[in-house]
Length: 247
Image (cartoon, rainbow, N blue to C red; front, side):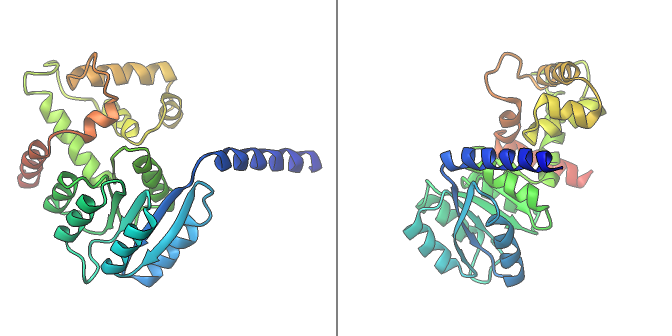
């Protein structure tokens, strides 16, 4: 038992030393609900690679903190009383080096598309797990987009529809398993992690990815499949979204 405790301590110390070598992601959090704000603050402060440098319930203060502290990520609730989509877009233009994640219960198509067009990098739905929010912050800090599952699945459905356009493999849509693999790829899971979750081998996962790339017309592209999904033209996404909502 004592040896196991020593080994575990060594593992923790090793992980901590790795994080010390990596600059922490500086975050400012703007949220009008104090209970929500304190809850998020509590788990952000436990992460060694994330530093919460400011929090507020005011848009004006959020802008001031961003201007003075230069956070890498601004996590913001667009439903605050003095906030609007126009204001979020203004913040994105004014502080291009600060990456914005919208943290909201609003899943309206118009809002999300406008946010993405304005340069906002992430959209996390309130009610998501702490792990998902942490993952979103880390992904956005790397320069990637991150979308919570509801809208991400909408984009994937668009990709499936796109496979009928004549520009990609005409032999059919994605299978259920291929959709599962595609969703997990978009979540930044490795082939080994996907295989473990789906109870298939890593090589089988890689074969599924190859088929998905072919069906979506991205064979030979240097663009990772995940980023291909998230950089589709907003106008096309909106058109497909409307079709899905009507059907």
